[in-house]
Length: 406
Image (cartoon, rainbow, N blue to C red):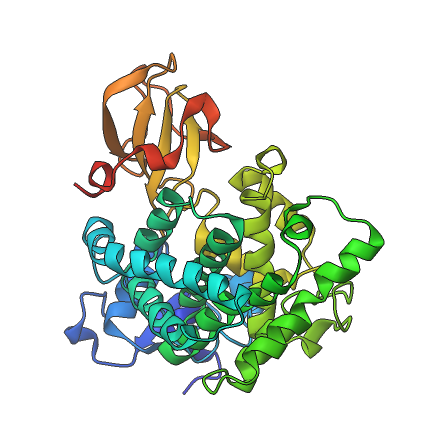
């Protein structure tokens, strides 16, 4: 084979590459027999349906794209692993996931309540509900996130644990982690802050802490380990997530001040999702950031608190406007994101709620921004900004599931 030819897994394809050979006969596929340039994400997705790997003509491909192949992989987690297709529509999965989510809420609330009483009765059930979350997110990553945004009513600690776990599963799905790895990571993140039940409630609710109070808060990591280490289903890798989720890439975290590769990959993920959710759903609403502001803040923390490539992949995974985000359009209309568009992250599906004059629509209207490209005046239509929950007195939970799932 020519030294200018390079074998490449389909997960690593990028626009600008020239595909010169497939891992199967061309005649079994709809692609041109003589090879072709990758010019759209749709072509890459089509290749993933037919092939496991292809051969790239290095000389005919975009040099900048080929040069990136020599850089380190975006994460040690992503190499060798499959990319999950969306198996069912978001409306179908919302209906299927509702029972799983309700059980998840009940279980998490009971775990925190029982731990305050010194009981370990329902930890085994946590593994089952965490696995159920993973199954749902694998089928469709938007549905469970939608449910979490709709049902955010059970106190910060419980809701934060659930949301952080969901962000992690969506992120892990994007990275292509195996079902086994997703199950383990989900359970570890769901339980990683359980040690906070041993802290005074007034301390946990404080937004600002002095040095002594911060030391007490940081002790929750060891409290969580003391609680979880005796449990047979907690593997060493899962316990490392619990122990290291507050460590930071530049060594500024706690409790050990670990840095770089000394932090296990899943703990790096846990740190990112924990921080993102704390930014967008803090204990005090006045401190909340919009999704765009939170993504910008994470971007500023690249190669400081968090590994740059993981931050980039996380933003790719959840989108700039995650499901459940209130947004204002360039037309002045206001809506809520109901489903991501994996090929065009800035043009998700929306449920329109207010008209350009901020008056409630008689009936919420669903639109796809990848299809609805211009407003009624013929001007380009796009998302102008994300909004905080409560903007224009709008909250996600005001809309029943059938408004987005019909």
